[in-house]
Amino acid sequence: MKETRSLLNGLVACGVALAMVSTLAAQTASQGSAKVVRLKGAARYAAGPNAGQLLKVGDIVKPGAVIQTAADSRVDLVLGDGSASAPVAQPSVAAGVAAYAPSAEQNVVRLWENTLLSIDKLTETQTGADVVTETQLDLKAGHIFGIVKKTSAASKYEVKIPNGVAGIRGTVYDISAEGVIKVLEGSVVLAYVGPDGTVVTQVVSGAQQFDARTGVLSALPVPGQDDLRRYLNQVRAGLTPAPIPVSADTTLKYISPH
Image (cartoon, rainbow, N blue to C red):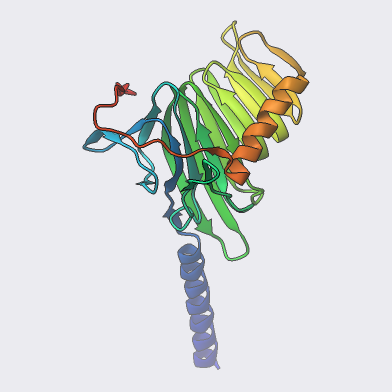
């Protein structure tokens, strides 16, 4: 009887151990990447020993890279899951546009001109019941426009700015490094340091804008909404000018983040 009970206890212990191993394996985070799907003008990136490398359409950028756009330039990136297989913009000679339409399951971010953005983290964890993603971007200068897909409750999408950090979920947004937040759809929660040195939290909902410099939350004016909708339609439908070839003599200085 005692031997049978010991055997059962041993089997239970082994089962628990195997379950824990399986759970840990299922929850191992995999590193994602970003893919350049559209480019106008010129942009550089720095990653590890590669400093100031020119970006081109189709490039895969890993977390830890810093991207900078030149004047009158912009870059569209697909972030995380599915980025490697994302199609790139194909210029149409007849229409004079680059056609690229990201799916609803893709996170897309556009870097506007004179923007410096660090891709700090892109991970995906399979928990068995759900997929948990974590995206961390660091906007050091300039401004970005983004589309964030609906994610699991445990997932995180954050954009750091020099004076704070914005938490984003299921949102169409426009953020400047100076702390101007515009939201077309969804919501953004911004935590920033106020003039008196205290941390302030502000929720910015759809059709609203917030300026951390003044602390003013207001309705996003119709022209601003039209701008965001135009950006959104451009990114989704690919109605942007065809990519301009980047030449080696492009005048662009890489700004070190350090």
